[in-house]
Length: 171
Image (cartoon, rainbow, N blue to C red):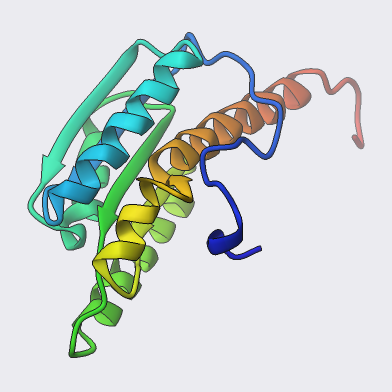
C-alpha cells in the first residue's frame, strides 16, 4: 500500500518491549527540518517500548549514513542501527544516485553484519511530501523505522532461541 494511503506511525504487528536492546540512530542533518522530527519520533518510540540504551549521531547528508552505521557497528555491541534521512527530488538525477547508493549501502551492511540496519530515508518528490511523512498527515517515517527495528530485534531473538532449543541429530 502506498504511503499516501497509510499512516506510517501505526504498527503493522504486535510489538514487544526491547528494554535490553542497544540501538543507534544515525540522522542526516541535510533537510534538518524533516530529519529532526524523524529522529525525535524514532527516539520517542524506542523509549516507549523500553529502550534506554540509545546512541544518537548526526552526519552531514544521507550519503554518509552507511559509513556512520558501519562505524557504529564496529565500535559498539548494537542490536540495530536506524538510519534517517531525506533526499528530495531535484531538477537533475542527483537524488536518484544518492538514494540508490544509500539504499544499497545500508542493505549490504545489514546483510554483511547480520544486524538490522534500518532504511528510514524519505525520497519524496517535494518538500510538502516530506513534511507529510515527518509528522504530517501520513504520520512519521521515524516511528515506522523504530517499529521495524523492534520487529527485527525480536526476530533475531526468536531465531537464536529456536537454534538453542534444537535437540538431537538431523533437525
